[in-house]
Amino acid sequence: MTNQNLPGIAILPISEFVTHRSKLFAQMTENSVAFFSAASEVTRSNDTEFAFCQNKSFYYLTGFNEPDAMLMLIKQASSEQSILFSLPKDKKHEIWHGRRIGQEKACQHYQLDQCFTLDEQSELVPQYLNGIKQVYFAFDDENLSQHVFGYLAQVRASTRQGEKVPTQLIDVSPMIDELRLIKSTNEIELMRQVNTISGLAHQRAMQITSAGLFEYQIENEILHEFTHHGARYAAYATIVAGGDNANILHYTDNSARLVNNDLLLIDAGGELSGYAADITRTFPVNGKFTEPQKALYQLVLNAKVAVISAIKPGTTFAKLNNIANEYLTRGLLDLGILSGDLTELVKEKASKKYFIHGLGHWLGLDVHDVGDYHINDNKEQCREFTPGMVLTIEPGLYMPLDDMDIAEQWRGIGIRIEDNIVVTKQGCENLTANCPETITDIETLMKR
Image 1 (cartoon, one colour):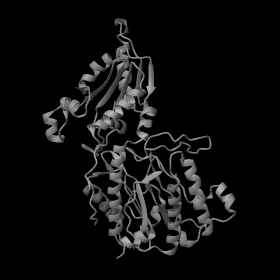
Image 2 (cartoon, helix red, strand yellow):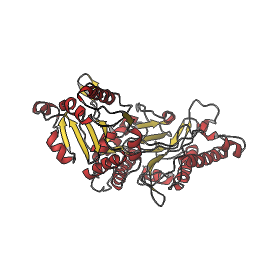
Image 3 (cartoon, helix red, strand yellow):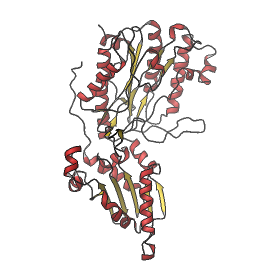
Image 4 (tube, one colour):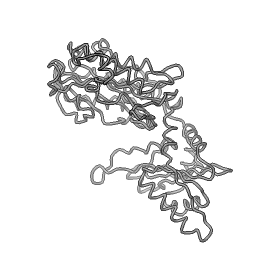
C-alpha cells in the first residue's frame, strides 16, 4: 500500500545501555547494591507462551532480551561493577526453544563486568552483600523482593561469623523512572523511526478501509505494515473501532463489520527495539466525512493543534489541559451540544462530559511510560517539560449512541486524534508528522 522508503532501522548501540548504567551509578550512594530482574515467559495455553516482553527497566540498563535474568550493580569507593546472572548455554534446550547468548558472550557484547549462571546466585549474591550498607530494588516487583529478602536472610544467618548485613532498603523505581523520562538523542531517533513506521501503518489502514470489511481485517493490515518495516510487535493491543465502538475507550474486540457513513477510530502503534509509538487517527469508512462528523473532527483537530503549538520547556500538562478545555468547550457551545455561559462552562470544565480521558501521557519503553507528573492537590499535572521528554497529545470527543441528551446527528460519533511529541530546546517536534490528519489529506488519500 505504501512505497515510501525508510532509512535503516535504528538500533540503540550497546554504549547507550552502558551510559544508562553510569547515570544510575551516579545516583547510588557508596557501598550500595542495586538489583533489577528480567521478565519471565508467560504461559498462554498449556505449554505455549505469549511472545516474550522484557522488563523495561531491566532492558533500559542492559539491552539484554532473555528471560529470568538478574542484574546486580555494585558501587563501592574504588569500583563500580555490573554483574549479570542469566540462563546457561544448554544445547538440548536451544534445539527446542532457540539460542541463548551464554555468560562469556553476554559479558563481551553487553559490556558487563561479570556474568554468571542463575544457579550461582544463591552462593555469590550473599557474598557481594556482605558489608554493603544500602540495597536498591523495585519494591513492587514481588518476585525480586522475595529473592532480595532471601539473600539478606543468608547474610544475616552468618553475622556470628563476622558478616555484616545491609541496613537500608531503598525503592529504586523513582530513580530509574526519572532517568527513563528524559530520552537521549539515540532514543529519540529510535522513537522517530517507530513513529514513521506506525504512520505508514495508519496510511495503509486508510487506503484499505471500506464498508463491509471487518475491523480485524484492518487490524491485520496494520500489523502487516509494522512487521514489514521491522517493528515485529505492536506496542499495545490495537484498537480498530467502527461507529459507536469508538465510544469504548479501550475497545479491542475488533470483530464488527464496518458500516458505510460511520467513522473508524484506530489507535495503533508499533514497537521497535523496545520503544513504543502510540498514534490514533479517526476517518470515514467510505472516505468522505459527513457534515456532523466534519464539524466534530475539525474541533478536535483544532484543539490538538493549539495544544501542541504551546509545548515547550516550562509548559505543563496542566496548562495544556486548560487550552484543550477552552477550545473544546467553546466549540461544543458553538455547535449547540453545550449550552450556557462560556466563561462558566470553561470554569466548570464542561467539555469533560464528552472528553472523558486525559490529554496525554509520557511515552517511551512503555506506552504509558514511567515518570512523575507532579500532581498537586487539585489533581493537576504540574511537572514542567524539559528537553528530551516524549509525550502523547490525544484530545477526543465521544458521543455514545444511547446519549439522548444530544441531537441525533451527533450520536454514535467517537473521535480521537493522537500524536507523539518530543520536547526540544526550542519548542517541540511532532514525531507523527507522516500520519495524515487534516480532513483534506485524509479524503485525498482515501479517494476511491
